[in-house]
Length: 147
Image 1 (cartoon, rainbow, N blue to C red):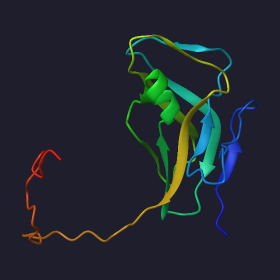
Image 2: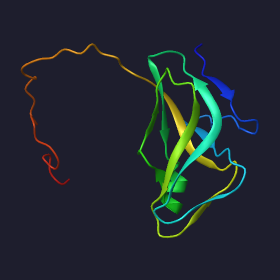
Image 3: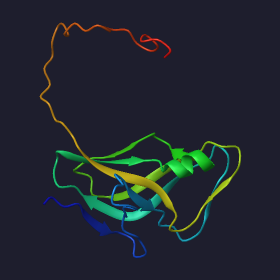
């Protein structure tokens, strides 16, 4: 069985945790000593206190917002989805943004994001002069209709 290796890089770090057996993501915790206030529109980079080693280059870790924080408090990720490549072994940090009009306090050890480990396809790249024809073609934003 392949393993995700996790190292605490801060003494008080908490390991990621799957809340239920059916959870795809592992909750990541804010490894901070004091609360951080996120004002409306405010941003912060929150350390998790952990570093990871993925099983190989065919995997990546993806950091997603926690739906409860996003829907109830407007706390999302600065880059929508964070990507941790297989060769990165530094501390996992989470860039967050407050998208609501009220301040929000991030407390020490609060669950701030979730990490999902997924396989990554690594196809060979081939430059071509023409792409395959499709029904949609080059139709972009809104080209498939409103519904």
